[in-house]
Image (cartoon, rainbow, N blue to C red; front, side, top):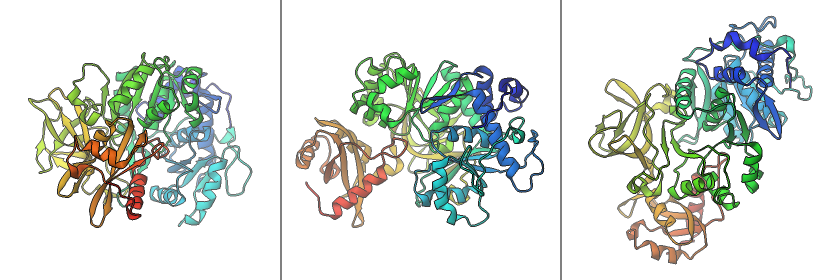
Length: 556
């Protein structure tokens, strides 16, 4: 890793103000606060703000210097020459974190790509985003080589800092080609593109602008008051938008980010204590994993002051178990789709929350951030237009959001169909999530709009079935899926906890559910399949359910 010795905090002072409302401007704030303190720690190695900053300038300069048509190597601030879309093909490594900064310092669009994802998906992402440069590590380079046949046009520039010399790869990042300072970026310009799973199976590109990110992080600054002594977990891969929360909340405050390796869960309390972790953020699946490894004993996590969860419904029992283990922390349930810049609501766990607001045992998602407006869209197309969510009674419908955090549209405009609502002269993003809103503005999560299926003429809420199964003796957690069979649907529930006969589980459920809502098959699992961000992989469960039913393993 190239390190330039001049004082980074001093040299960047003149550019911080001009970049204040950009995403990388938050890192410059942290640099000014904590120049010699670690910006991140990975594999036991601390990388200071100064080292990360100077390395990012060097990496960005090396790419810019190698870009076709670039004359000279002065790296003068304000030049727009160089790569415009930079993929970061690495995860939770120095190359991932510094590579992200280097892309932003170029004034380019950053595109995180996970080297462990299927080659076809990654090829699709690189092509759709129009990537013209890649920053990777040695492991990622091996993956990139397998994708080489997929380039329709000229191959991108490839930077592997300190890699083995290769004619087609940039490995040197000398001080003389380094940028003098991060290049400016327009507020409306795209800071990064993340790809979500599309309904067609093709990933959908979601561009996030510097302006949207700035609005979001200003909201968080006011809410949490993070500081330079905070140490943030990173359980998320960079391809998951919640990873941006960890990085830029920490970096905007001069704090430190520490990736959580899977082996750390074997002794999570000791790991968090050793790292002096103060901020935990994960999907609720992280709670189940911690429970299985014995990390949730009362008072086991005393150093945490914030415990945040997002990405999936947070069940009340899980949240309360975590709070007992981390009694000095504030537990919050955050909610928001990638299209609305990470999260748009937050609910703080409190004994004063009425029981009825835990719909299907799920913690409420909280009121919408003050900078945003919300409305509910009913199935008949009518709109509850009370944008701030305060009225005389409860209302229910699909949550729609507008405001400065909303993206302008998908990378492929064809994907915009049916995702937006035009109402009252404004454009609103349709989240696809059904919610219940209370007169005080608090919102409870009901389920996905596509969580409803027809079974034998009944409209069935999959989340309601899972909640009922979760309440059975011996069941720890449950996920119900609808498997397509012969033009109809059959319900299959996967559960963890103590194994039991399907007939016994079905019999017990009839006390709470109509017969049509009782699953045809119950399948015990030691643990649920997870994607790289510790979210339950429901598509895998649906495939398993269809395979089980096809093989005739139906027990009533």
